[in-house]
Amino acid sequence: MKILDIGCGANKHAGSDVTGMDIVNLSGVDIIHNIEIFPYPFEKSSFDTVIMHHVLEHVTRTNGTNIKVIEEVHRLLKPHGKLVVDVPIGQWFYYDPTHKNYVGYWYWKYFSHDFPLNYYTHARFNLKYAELVGIHGIKYIEKLTPVFNKLYQLSPEGMERFINFINLDAAIKYTLRKI
Image (tube, rainbow, N blue to C red; front, side, top):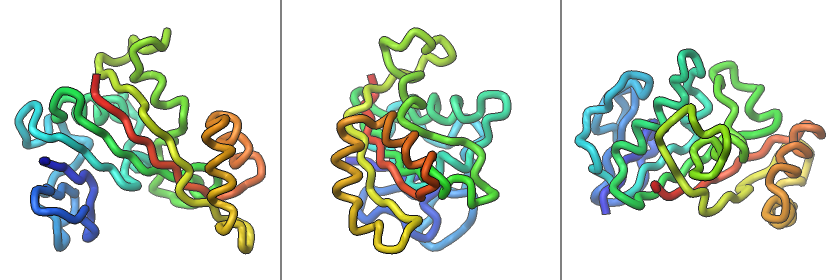
């Protein structure tokens, strides 16, 4: 299974068939490329899985660049390929001055087949799973991550609003399939 780890830095996903791509030449980076420059240096349908671990929030929204990144990932994935994205939500997003693109549960609706506002892009994905993978911001609250994840499973939109409202730090992992 061929995997592309976009923005891998020095922490490329483990495995023998993993290609690491980053803008910085670090150990583990196989291809040095800015993800905001299109096209990426790969053929269409080259990968079974694309991983973006804490990367998408760093992409600018200027001129729809954030949408173009997802379209490029869509181009690189094989039919029914998997996209795995981890992003910060809540206050964690706002702490980092390099964060430009807030990615929440609603973000992925614009890439779905049946969303009425999906006309901004041709790239289509099914959101298969969304998981709250970490919560921080108050002493010892990280121990409640499993509880918060259960609540997140019941109402992702509601929990994302709640996390923002009470100024917590959290991370969400989205798993999507190319349509």
